[in-house]
Image (cartoon, helix red, strand yellow):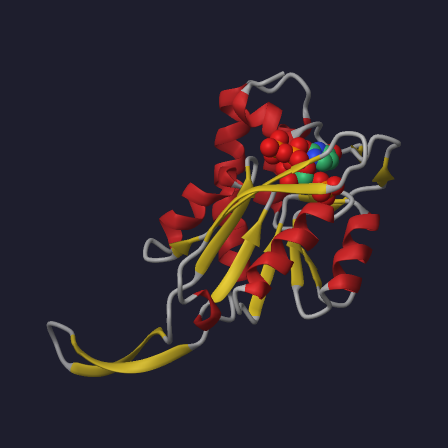
Length: 209
Ligand code: PRP
Ligand code: URA
């Protein structure tokens, strides 16, 4: 599908299977999400621009590549998006962070904002919006609208699991925003949950159910 990257790396697929299992502990679930965050970060940053700088090794002078331009902004959607953050910051320690607080109204499935804080120069940086679950896409669409309001132009979306309905909606509403995901599942159920999915990511991460 155009603009959608499904990461079929065996480590990602193996860890995702472990996360789907209903009996997985809260600690195990969080640990796996963190590990997959690192692997997805590797994929979503694959084409970051480089520039050549002069350095001196113990042996000789040389030109060598370093990342060009301003550092990334990682933008987790609270709560579950935070599960990706530490792993991604391990790979890109100087990234800035924007927190986007949203929850889905359980009846209407509309995304309700309760918190937003972003770096002042977000417009000049590539923004990686992250949330493990892309279900109806109401949360992702709202989060991306919010960072666009602040001027962000170079935006990517990373998730663990997506529903086909959510992928279609996000690509329709924000065609400039490409998606990185570990899997696209079958469908949404009547309550807006991904089937077969892994349940409620926030509750499983924090042990709140
Ligand atoms: C979950 C999940 C996403 C959202 C996805 O969060 O972490 O943010 O649902 O669903 P959508 O694509 O239909 O919008 P939830 O609203 O349950 O909040 P929480 O992370 O605070 O538990
Ligand atoms: N949010 C979740 O955490 N899980 C789903 O399956 C759908 C939305």
